Length: 157
Image (tube, rainbow, N blue to C red; front, side, top):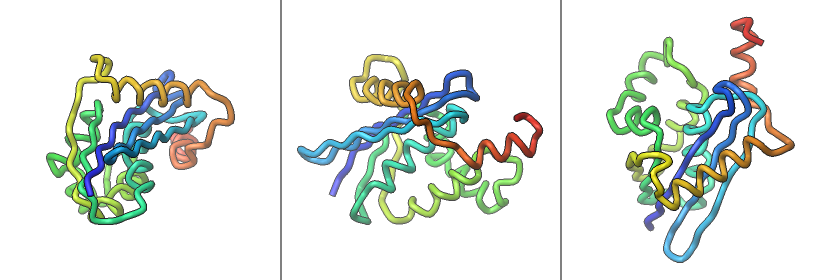
């Protein structure tokens, strides 16, 4: 079964309030996902959008194509950097918690990434941007616990 996923992440201030948006399409079915966080980064939200989209899949061994405007996410996977980072325990790399979470999902499917230019009028990318920014601007924001704990450890909060 083929699934096409579009994702985007947003952070107001970077770091700041953030959100992610994802649109999943398979045949005639379409699903939208989003959530907002009180303190996070754009890259975390870009990656979390991908993770949550994959986690929402009820079946395994799917052919998933993920369209993202995040070169950080796209290149880390497509150029296989993340696998080297994992072998080195993510030493000096940001977002190890999310990359580890992603790497538990990756082998369950046939996943490929396609980079698309953000804010260039692509309807699905624009929809994901609206989902992400609306979530970031909304109420009842979630806590990005790993990120906030890291900020406390670094004496930044």
